[in-house]
Image 1 (cartoon, helix red, strand yellow):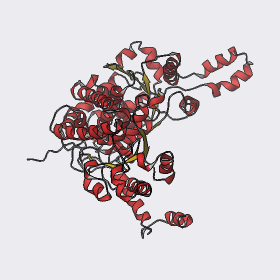
Image 2: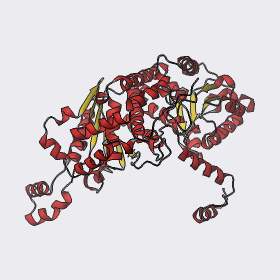
Image 3: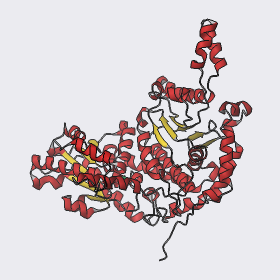
Image 4: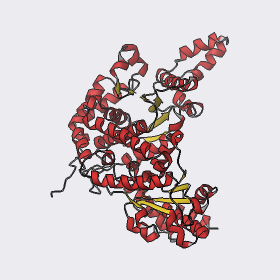
Length: 537
Ligand code: F6P
C-alpha cells in the first residue's frame, strides 16, 4: 500500500495573507480596543460564535473584519480543511515520526481502528468494574480499595485534571496520582495505604520514562516488603505501548492494558491511560466524556471554517501569538473544579507547538506557541491581575466561565469574570482617574499627584468562553476543543504538533548525568554545580 503522507509545506511565509497580516498587526496595535466598541455597537454579535450550548466571545480581541478575512485567506492558502481531513483520516500528520495522531479514533464509533479501540475499552471496563465493585482481591485475598497511578506528562495530567474536575462524581476507590520523582510525592501517597489493599498502575506509553520506572521500583519494593515478592504482580497494572517491557518488570500479561502507538501522550486521556480516572468516576461517566469529545470532533470536522469553534479559537490565538507577536496566553478558568486546566494546557499547547522547525526543515520565522500559564479565576484577581492592569505587557487571556450558576456565589464568580474582561479591555484613563479621585474628596493637588498611579491603560485582549454545565460530557468537549485549536495553530505554522524531540534531548542529558559521568564536553557551570551537590545522602 502506498504510504500516506501529510504533504504540508512551509507555505506560511509565501502566502500573500502573511505580510498583510503583519502590516495589519502594526496598524491595529495603535488602536485601543475601546475604540472598536465605541465605533460598532454590533461588535459582540459579529465577533462571537455559538455552538451546542457554548459561546465564544472574541469581540474583545484586537481584530477587525479585514483581520478575519486575512486569517480566512490563510486558512485556505494553507488548506487547513485538508489538514483536518488528514488528521481525521489517520494520515501521517506526525511527519517526523511518520505516524498518525489518532486521538479522535479513541472516541469515534466506527472507522479503521474501531475494533482495537473497542477491545481496549473492553479491557479497561473489565478491570474498572472489578475494582469499583470491590471484587478485585490482592495477594492476601483482601479487597483493593486504593489505586495509585505512577506516570508523568500525558500519563498523568489528563487523568489528574479530569479527576479533579469531576471530583463531585468520584465515588469509587481512593485514587492517587504520583508524577514526581521527588521521594516525598510517593511517600505522601503511601501514607494512608496498606500493601494488601493497594494496586499500582504503571502508566507509561514508552515504558522507558525514568521517573515512572524509578517510582515503580520503589512501589514494588513497598509491596514486596508487605506481601512477599510472589504477591507483587497481583497488585500491579500497566498501561503501555510496550507490554513486553511491563511484563519483564513483573506485571502479569492480562493486566497490561494496551496503548496504541498512534496515541500521543498528551492526547491519551481518552485511552486506557484513563484507568485511574475511570476507577474514580466509573465507566458510564468516562464514556460520557468520550461522547462529549466526539461531538466536538464532529463539529471540528464538519462545520464551515468561519463557524467552527476550534478553528476560530485557533485563528485568534495564532493571530495574537504569531501575528501580533504576543508572547503569553493566560488561561483563567472561573470554576474551582477547572483550577488546574492551565497546567494541563501547558503540556498540550507548549509540547505540541513550542517548535521552530517546519515540515520542510526550515526554521519558522513566525513566533510559535505562546507561554501558556494561568490559574483559578477570582483567586488570580488578588495576585497577578495587577500586572494585567498596569504592567507594560499586552497579555492575551482566555476567560472560561460555566454558564450554570446554581446560587448567588456562583453568579458572583461569573460576574467577576465579565467585570475583569471588561475592565481590562476598557481601562481607566488618567482623566477618568482624576475625576474619580476628586469625587472621593481628595484635594486637587493630591488627586493630580495620584491620578497617573490609578489610571489603567486597559487594551488587554481576551476571549471569553461560556461553557455549558460542567459534567463529563462538557469536560470532554472542552479538552477536545483545545486539542483541535492547538492543531489549527500548528498547521498554520507548518510545524509538527505531535513530536517532542526537545524533551527527548532533556531526557538524554538527565540520563548522562544520572549515569554518574559528566559528559566530556560538560560546561563549567554544570561541572561546578555537580561538584557542589556532592554525593547523595
Ligand atoms: O517528557 C515528555 C513525554 O514524552 C510526554 O510527551 C509524555 O506524555 C511523557 O513524557 C510520559 O511519557 P511516557 O508515557 O512514555 O512515560
